[in-house]
Length: 180
Image 1 (cartoon, rainbow, N blue to C red):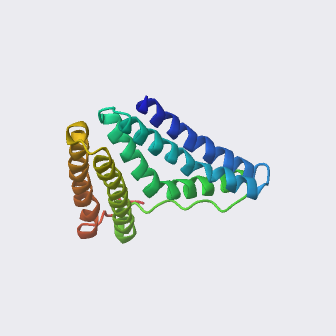
Image 2 (tube, rainbow, N blue to C red; image 1 turned 120 degrees about the horizontal axis):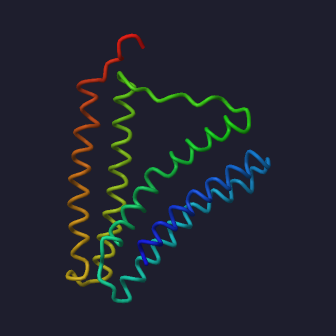
Image 3 (cartoon, rainbow, N blue to C red; image 1 turned 180 degrees about the vertical axis):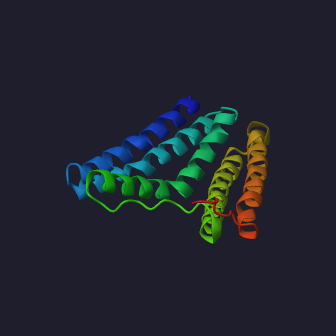
């Protein structure tokens, strides 16, 4: 059930984003558009509550419960920038807004963007791991939540690899291709 709920929450996230931006730019109703955009965190709260209730009612923690925490951490850390990107695209395409600038693909600016992306990943890991630890404490049965420790550890490894890649651009910036 939690797996389907994760998929449903991701769909709800995009439905709220598209409905909010459509209302804002196509129907020229900024207030209602803003209210619809506020629906995106509600989907996250539904997922968090359903995950916690499922575990509290006796379910053993599964990979789906761990993925739910990762999803929540990622949407908190990356959600605002995703919505900002979509807003810029919508404003440009439907409301005569300024053409969004392409992100730097080389040099110091690219290195800065990579570091910034890693900081967001660190935030996502911190929030997701905190959710997992809180659920482990709340359930109080390590045998039922052992998979959460595995999730935290493996995600920390991914975060470490991401750190090496992201910060390598600071030491060895990507050079512009010849002729560009």
